[in-house]
Amino acid sequence: MRETSGIGNHDNQTPAAELAAPTSQSATEGTQPAAPEPSQRATPNLEERLHKAELTAAEHHDAWLRAKAEADNIRKRARGEIAAAHKFALETFASELLAVKDSLEAALAAENASVESMRGGAELTLKQLAGVFERFNLSEINPVGQRFDPHRHQAISAVEADAEPNTVVQVLQKGYLLHDRVIRPALVLVAKARSGGAPPLNPGR
Image (cartoon, rainbow, N blue to C red; front, top):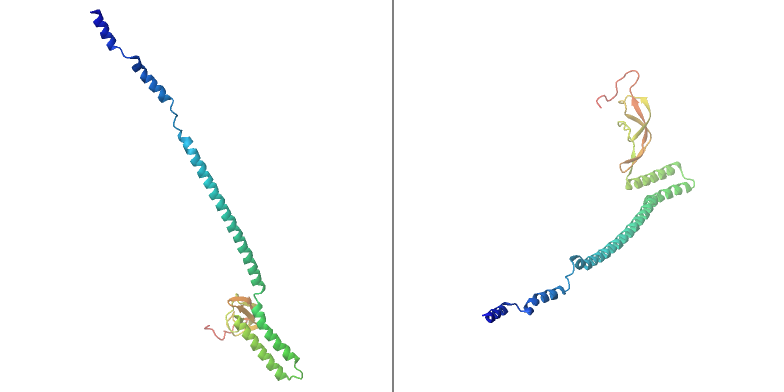
C-alpha cells in the first residue's frame, strides 16, 4: 500500500525541466534589442528638411538680389532718359526757329532795300514764325472785347469806357498758350463805368 502511494506521488510531480522552461524563455526575450524611439527616427528627416529649407532660402535670396540689381539699373536708365528728354525737349522747336532767324538775317543783309521790301520781308518772316507756333500748339491770347479772365489776362488798370465793366478794351501785350497752359498772360486794360453814369453800349451782354 505504501509503494502504490509513493508511485502516485511521483507521477504527480512536475519535471524540473518543464518548470525551468518559462524562465529560460523570459530571459531570451529580455535579450532582444529595444525598438528605436520615435524622436530618434524623426531626427534625420528633420535635418533633411532643414537643409532643403536653407537651400530654398538661399535661392530666393539670390533671386531677390538679382531683381534688386535689375531694378536699380532700370531706375538709373530712366533717370538718364528723363534728363536727356529735359535737355533736348526743345530740339525740334529750336530747329524750326533757325529758318526764321535765317530769314531775318537775310533781310538785314539786303543793301539798298526799300521800306516796302523790308516790310514785305518782315511780314513773310512773321508768317513763317506763326506757322512754327501753330505746329507746336503755341497760340496767342488777344482778348479784345472779351470778358476779363484772371486766369489768362493780367489787368494793368481800369479805364472809363462805353463797354460793359470788366470787358477788355485794349491789349498792351498779347499772351500765349502752350496747348492749354498759359505761359504768358495778356496785359490788358479793362473797362469801368463812366463817372457820369452813362449806360454801356451793350447793356444786354
